[in-house]
Amino acid sequence: MFLKDELLKTNALNAKHLEALQQKEDDFKTLKFANSILGSDESKRETKLKINTLIKEIDDCISKLSD
Image (cartoon, rainbow, N blue to C red; front, side, top):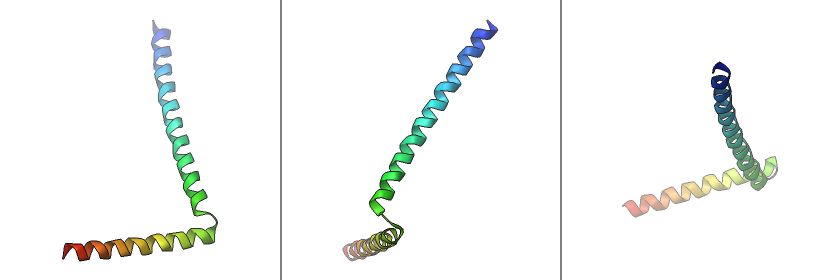
């Protein structure tokens, strides 16, 4: 009975670890894709600046619509 309980616990822990591993792999794929979109370090900087500019423009539009 003791070995059977240990086996069940180990299998449950293994399933939990496999699920965590799958989540980490999914996160890695997402980050890898995001980095491929941004490109080189210089491109990343330019892209971030463009995004920040767009966010400011959107904020201005929202502000004007709120008035």
